Length: 603
Image 1 (cartoon, rainbow, N blue to C red):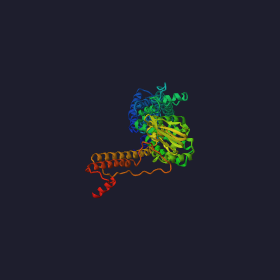
Image 2 (cartoon, rainbow, N blue to C red; image 1 turned 90 degrees about the horizontal axis):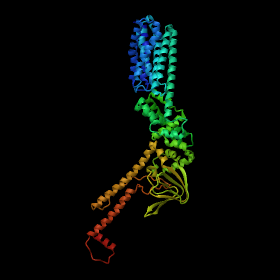
Image 3 (cartoon, rainbow, N blue to C red; image 1 turned 45 degrees about the horizontal axis):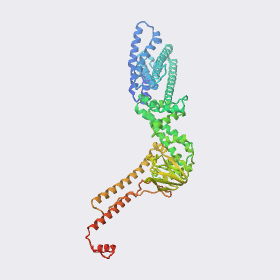
Image 4 (cartoon, rainbow, N blue to C red; image 1 turned 135 degrees about the vertical axis):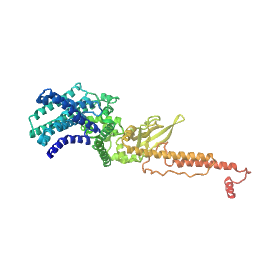
């Protein structure tokens, strides 16, 4: 075989082989299963081609003319045979939607064209093998790939549509493939060389545009279906939409369950994360449009930058096909759809989406204070024990949810037994705390301006143990527990800071219990001498502003205080036992203290 012939065969083989290779290595189809693409290409090259060759030979042997065979009979038989593997795959999880159908169909067509070029056209080319390879081989590959791609898309739309005419899609797809095939064969019978090459380019470009249009239409249908699933319908009232969204079998979770059969659990987790990241970026960008200090704006911008880096990594893991699906079905520029999608994600994944910031935008609270006031309140919050390890940027963000609440003299803020649903910072006036005592109430203490009341209710929400009543006109800054919970859900750094505070409290409690147990053990053994007590490292105390803890909280000095109480008790027991061991003596005129001093001197 001459060098020119070798080059011609190489060209005929390289185009379809390179295309299939790119499908696999670039993961265009997004399934992560190259075997499916190889299966389709193998069926086209071996199964469909040789069955069609045998079928065409049998028809030709019966006296059917070559013209009738190539213009009518062969296109029907070959397209039906190529479609068999796609029909087989339609019920497989690997065949999920129209992009898969397009890729699998193109692979079948390329495999068929490869064998047709190698076994039919090139062996008959003689000395013109290179020209045939450049014209006929190229045009045949493009035609077969386009025709089978149309069949694959039609089957993909059959799987993903709920239209009453869905059964017509496969017939339409196969019909278009046969029409394209027959038209090409009729043109190729009368053309050669450069004109045939232009026909090939026309088939390739035209077929590519048709396939692209079909994919766009299919993805538009997907968007419509999922939008309806999310109840985003202009004909439904807000109340009805909210009710429908809360049903168990609809909403975003229903969408994810439906897609799990096609993309798999791993891809669904990535899609969920991608949508959450996009939601958070949009929410934070909306925050930047409002008034905020430079510190808070810088924190939001850094958070957006971190999300963008994570989003690029998630996109890389998803693959092109799945990413194309997500971008078309859940477009970020559709604000109405994104609004519903964000609400659904926040409802089912509160740790992923910034519900707090969504609430701030809807409630309008973010406009209550100036950036300077928010900065000052963040400084105030940082002096409260439970917030001491939280960054000022996060505290300033949280301060946007604070409400100003005023009470008149004698007005009750909360009663004993009420739900612990808010913390109060006293700005003006005083708050008296009363506790039940023998059927009556007893004044426990009075909180002055600069104090905080009920900060632990933000953490546990337990019922109030006392009644709080305004003394004079009282002005407070109130932070609700519900809003605070929304704030910390999607901010792990704040949660870690709170855990550090609680861990310190647990450590102090443990030290106190250990000191008490140790003293009880020593006393039970009759050991009354003082023991060394390891006190925890002193914690920095906030200056200036008075921060008053709940009455039942522990301080860093608690272990030493407990130890001091037991030490005093042990000392008294020691003195009493020592005195009981002394012999009785007649009374004297000496003062007891002088007698004690003299006894010690004698000893």
